Length: 451
Image (tube, rainbow, N blue to C red; front, side, top):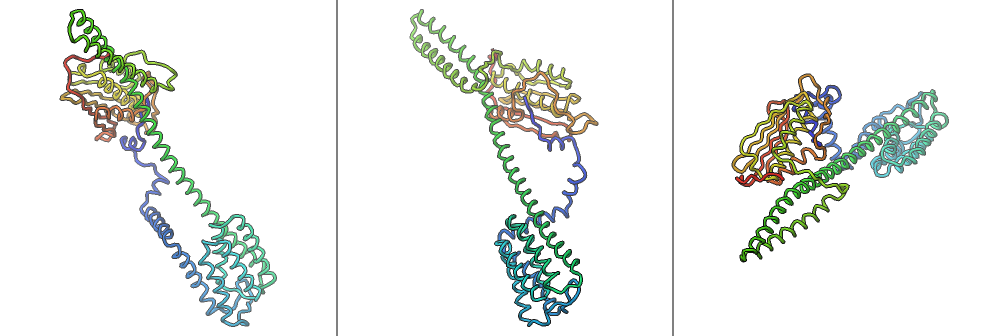
């Protein structure tokens, strides 16, 4: 038997506080608002990508416009450029040629960068520096973020070559080494930032894909576990139903023989009843053969457990170190074999869940009540012993059956009797409770005991 108690709920049941450090930082309201704002911006960019592209163009225009209108002609690394020898319209044309291609930077990043690089080389060949040249760094960043990595290598080599030509050959510069260091440093930073964000985006995409796969696998495991548990329940119920049918067939054959000896007309009807019972048993054997495929051809020869087998079960649990209090209300022996088997399995699953997650130092209370067509099973434990940290107990092995599927099995068995299941932390905040109510037929006075 394998009973799984959800980790988060178990932590809640023990009153554990969230661990300090990174988790607490992520829970900070300011960071939460920033993350929500980032997601909102991403959704807006997905719906209207032109907004961000236009905003980038306008920002570069605002940076380039003061230099274009009121620039003094001083080069950034000493000396003066040749802008005074060129018409204002030519400067505006160069600035426009550097800025406007940015509007297509995310759609065709490689083409955008190489166009801007060509315009930058042309302006440097005329001996001028324009602040609009920052668009080359933005285009290089975009190529590293969204473009081809093979073309990025060529773009990096082109940027280094252009920087060397600009400071040593094309533009008069008083400090060429300083200028080369600055240009290569900014180009490297643009590429590094773009690659970093690209890798981060790929990592997040991989995590999202993995989360989707894990969710699908979790659903599949849940369905497979439920199917396996239903198959196990069906195998157990086959033995019960098969025994009852065998008794019915035997009684019908005996009655038919007696009726024949007495020349009674009911003899034929009794023989038909016996033949029908044997046919039903044959069908049950065929169904059992299908259900037991992959079970190594083994067949359970021991009778199915019932209410009377709870005492040996509790004795084994107590021997494992768990203190168990057992109380019954009502005539449980008069329950049908199937109901008794369901009660036994639910108690077995719940106690194993307690042993696995609360350990042998805790205590459990088992109450089984039968009244007015309803059977209620309640198993409540006291949780981890004081001073024992959450997660310190992994579940000691006992002599209990280990072929079930824990809480899934409890729900599947309760569903056979349209029952209700409540599983979770106790209201006191310490311990765990399993409370199952089964709707069963009216109790019979005959006492249908197990074979």
